[in-house]
Length: 131
Image 1 (cartoon, rainbow, N blue to C red):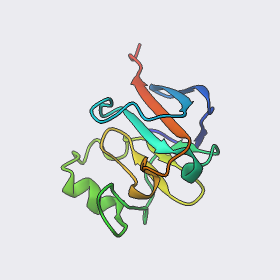
Image 2 (image 1 turned 180 degrees about the vertical axis):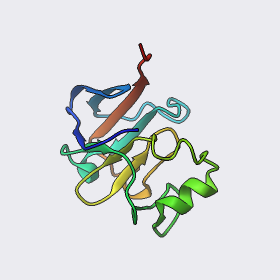
Image 3 (image 1 turned 90 degrees about the vertical axis):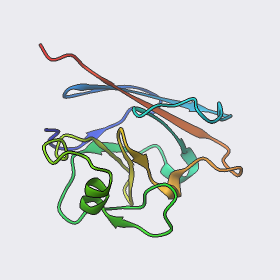
């Protein structure tokens, strides 16, 4: 279970309990199909550089990519069929205003890369082997 809040180094690497996070900034988007569940691209001008990773909290809300309105994170996790035993272990990338990414599942619609995006933030989570 991910406890506390952990600030991300942007650009750079951040070590979290059980995870290594790599962040980089790019000028162009590599295109569709270039990411997997533990990689994501964001509009850096929307997200900003002051991001943190934390676990879920009661009352969290999130606007999944493709939806016009935010929904309760709990409802998203149920709809996405995230097993109950995993829900407190899923890292959340957050700005001061929003949850930006439910790692492994979906980014926030408001932070997506669009044709107007000038600076792209790329985040990659790698699971560390437990000893």
